[in-house]
Image 1 (cartoon, helix red, strand yellow):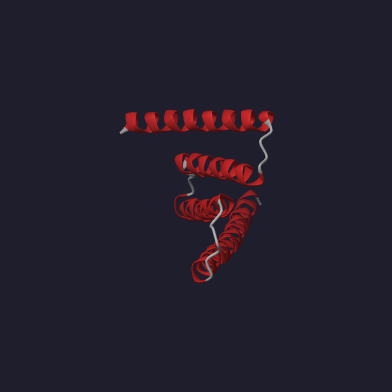
Image 2 (tube, rainbow, N blue to C red):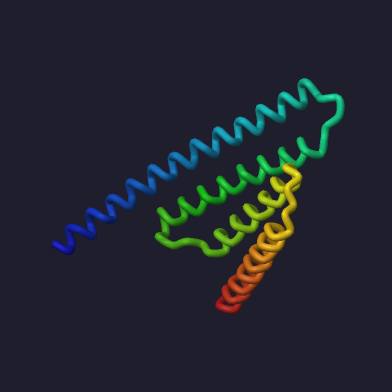
Length: 140
């Protein structure tokens, strides 16, 4: 009984992971195509003056696609090795925080409490990344 339950559970886990990966791939593809389309529109019909908000919006979109690609790579690695690359997770989190800062800049929202919290998260992620990178290089 115990053996069958774990076998069914592993099968269910595989199915869920495949569905998540396919959904993530579709969303990533749509986001990348939207980014390319928007950039093409700006190149074909250039505005009178490209504002800083549009440039920051492009950077935010590029970072969003990059986050999605890195998450897809994490899903793929988990499917193959059944392990999660912690460094990759830290990098995705740092990219997400950079994107959040850009979004806050675009919207003109600069609450000091949120900025302080965001900076604390970035510092904690950076220290965590450094420590994990240092410990993994010592093992080699």
